[in-house]
Image (cartoon, rainbow, N blue to C red):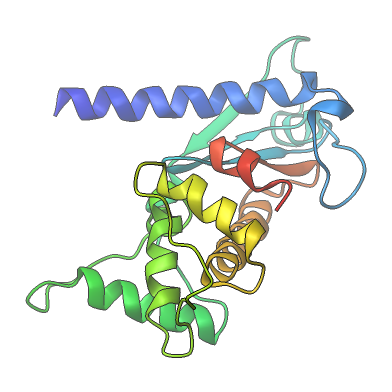
Length: 212
């Protein structure tokens, strides 16, 4: 529909804007997980984790020189944005294999094929899907001393809060898997785009996870 195409285009523009803003960020605007600086001379990528999942890559000056054999005029930047959230989810370990099976069983109807995309797991809704998977593991029973999420509050914010309160709970396990999936996709994104300048995680979910 026209409305859905307009929404998709708006999301792409937002990711482009995120990538374009990277060179203007100061050290205090960033929380480094590895390394101590970004290098805009090389490709830089943004992975946006929020209600959905998307990415954009800011082409570095070295890339532009190598590919065009000419100096790009000062002030011109080229950004390539995409819908990585719709890419297939590929498990990296046995836990993620079981997660994939859970998602297929949960969403498969009448043996119809169902694509488990990255966005089904790396997003706000993805966090909920992972919690459902973790809770159904036989060894993971919520003990009586643990709290349940407050239904009057955002389920995502409650998962994050309870993970801090109960570090050995299903909530913390959910966060651990969620962060592993983000890390996996960051590595994939760096390889796909040769982002030697750095890979940045942005979006509402990313901000919520910094201090967990």
